[in-house]
Image (cartoon, rainbow, N blue to C red; front, side):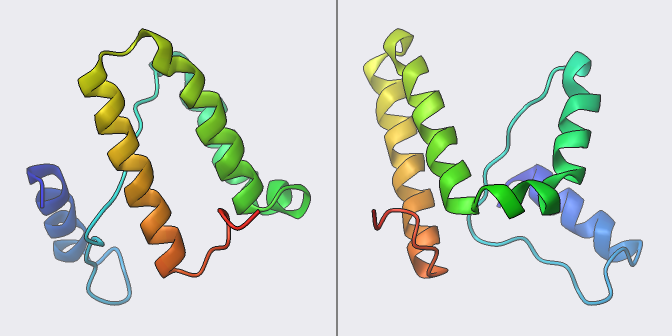
Amino acid sequence: MTSIAESSERFINENNLCATRFKWQDSASAFSVSKSDVDRVCKYILNQPKHHRKFSFAEEYESFIKFYEKTWVSLSPEQISERQEKIEGLRKICQEEKLEIFEK
C-alpha cells in the first residue's frame, strides 16, 4: 500500500467518514487533473448516473482505453510495457468482478 493510500485510509477512518471501516482494495488507479479542468471533471462525475443510461461502463471503459492507446506513440518501450501491465491488471479486476467488457 502506498503512503497516500495509508494516510487517506487512516484519515477516513479517524474522521468516521464512512458508516463502516474503510479499506482500499488491493489495486487502484489514479489520474491527475489540471486545475483548469477540476470543474469539468466534477460535473462529469456528478453526471455519471445520467451518462450511464446512455453508455454502459463497458462501452465507456473501452472508449477510454482506445483513446489513451493513441498516446503510446511517443512512449518509451518501458512506459508502454508499464501501461500494458496496468491494462492487464484492470482487465483481471473486471473479469473478477464479472464485468463483461472484454467479451465482444
